[in-house]
Length: 271
Image (cartoon, rainbow, N blue to C red; front, top):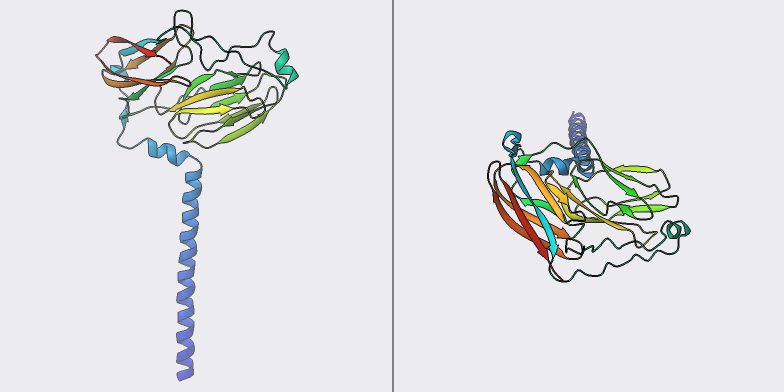
């Protein structure tokens, strides 16, 4: 009788331990599932869009902040890009192209400045645009050189050159990627986190480079030859506007704009 009781106790103990072991295994699977979800980037985007954010008031978005970015002093001489080591790239230009990292016109306007709302729209939720942002490789250069995109928006990378390129994204807040491309090839990426600015480079052609600004909102602009920018359809309020340039760094201004008002500002950079 004692032997039967002992055997029963042992069997009950083993069953209890097995049940606990099964529970631990289930918890492990659940944990790995959470990890996999985080690695996709969708979790990061969801965390960025807090439940406390409100819908953007389109009916009140009647204000505009616009202006110009200028250089203080004599405009620096435009540097030229040295292209070598690839016959196709060399033949794509009859003369060396301009170095886009610092382009100042005769009237002191600065091109390729990324201007955006740094503070003032954090409480709003914005839909992700359905149309992609496109980065092309033309004449062994990235086009455009400076660009903006919203988190979660499709980023189409393509090549129009009859040579081999690669697109190597090396940001700090977003996942790194590196695509080798032939003519006509396209790869699609997207960014999960806000990041101003992040670099894109070509490991094959050292002179190729571009920058992308990733935001949770659509209020950004890139200056052209005349150094102009415009941030339209804003609700009335106070904003912090930042101008970023890859060589000249950053400048910020606080701007208060009223309902239906257009406020003009100027950013001035110097060496």
